[in-house]
Length: 74
Image 1 (cartoon, helix red, strand yellow):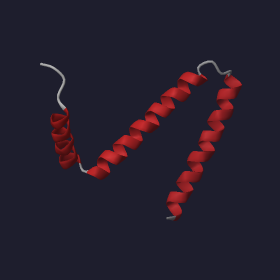
Image 2 (tube, rainbow, N blue to C red):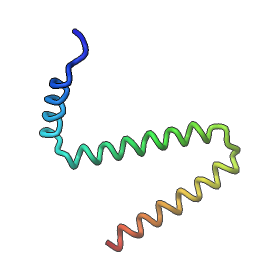
Image 3 (spheres, rainbow, N blue to C red):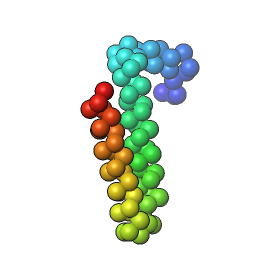
């Protein structure tokens, strides 16, 4: 069996949207994009020194804390 044609792919896409909903697929896409970005950053940081990694970790912790504070005030 070969590759599905364009109309078949569109039908599959419509069925997936109906099952999961557009909002859930958007969130899933964002989560997937964040995971890929994190993976690329981890591969890039593989050659970094431990001091550089700790500095980046502190920046990430501060960003998470700031985001958490914003969510609490909403």
